[in-house]
View 1: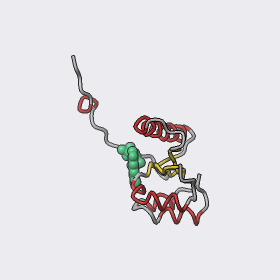
View 2: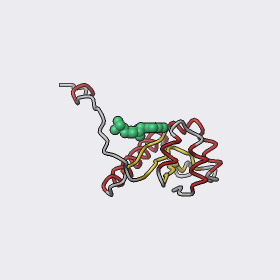
View 3: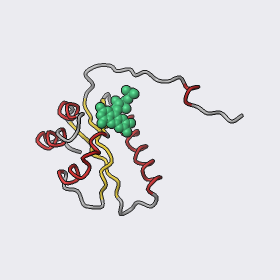
View 4: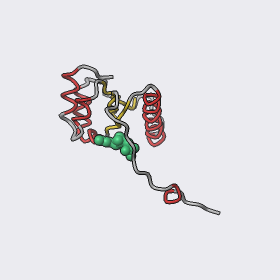
Length: 118
Ligand SMILES: Cc1cc2nc3c(=O)[nH]c(=O)nc-3n(C[C@H](O)[C@H](O)[C@H](O)COP(=O)(O)O)c2cc1C
C-alpha cells in the first residue's frame, strides 16, 4: 500500500493515468509471488479475482477504485521504485480514494457476450 506522496508522484510518472494516482490518497500495488506460484494461468486468474474482490470491498466501504494496468509497460521501474524482492512480479496498481462523483458505465447486453450450446 503506497500512501507516501513522493512515491505516488514517482509512480504517477510511469503511466498515462498518472492523474488518478496523484489524486487518490492511496495506491495498492499488487504482485504475484513467483516463489509460491504453481500454475501461471491460474495464478493470474486468482490475482484478477483478488483485485476484483478488493475493489468490491472498497466499494462497500464507500470508496472508489481504479484498476490501473497501463503502468505495466514500466513494470521493472515500479519494482525498482518499490524495492520489492525479485520473486515479486508486479501485476497492477489499484488507486483508492473517495469518489468525486457517481459513475455509471455502458454495458453490452448479456445476450451479446454469452455463447449458448443448446
Ligand atoms: C485489467 C485492467 C486494466 C486497466 N487499466 C487502466 C489504466 O491503466 N488506466 C485507466 O484509466 N483505466 C484502466 N482500467 C479501467 C478502469 O479501471 C475502469 O475505470 C474500470 O475498469 C471500470 O470500468 P467501467 O467504466 O467499464 O465500469 C483498467 C481496467 C482493467 C480491468
